[in-house]
Length: 204
Image 1 (cartoon, rainbow, N blue to C red):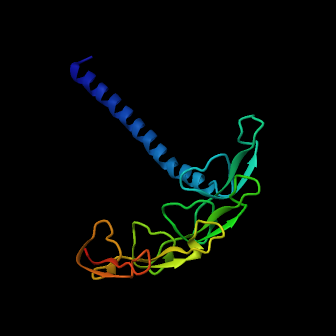
Image 2: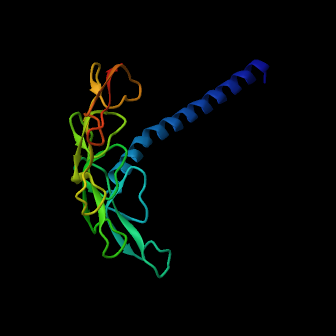
Image 3: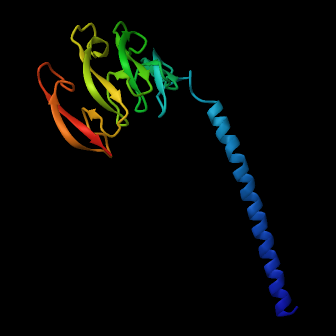
């Protein structure tokens, strides 16, 4: 066999191998979305589990031996929920804030002891919440017992009037990526009575 014919044969074999590899890879890529769809459709919302994976909260706790590894003691089992606006959950999560705290036994891990739960809210401009969030600023604070972490307390806790930052807004803090062109002192952002604090004129 001539050198030229040998080179053509090798080139043909290599092209066939590359074509087969490309077909295999295209088939794998085509099946990936179907796998992702299956994972989404069979989510963990409503499942009882021994821990809480990232992206979920829980709204009930059951103390039993399912998660005790064969031991004779009770361990917590969590009723998983996908966080949504308006859900009352035993924990909060970074993508949400909460606008009230309630008390009961659903989240408790001790018999006869009440525990707190959070009314989750998707942040929006104008929402009064018990906490701030990095994507927003706030332009004044209030006081309310609905945000108190002390059971039965009549002492109000601070609330925050959330605002989407815009140029020219007077705000109680400066969001990441923003700066300010002026300041003033008043009681809008004060955490205590008659204690003026700084407010900032935002620019971006």
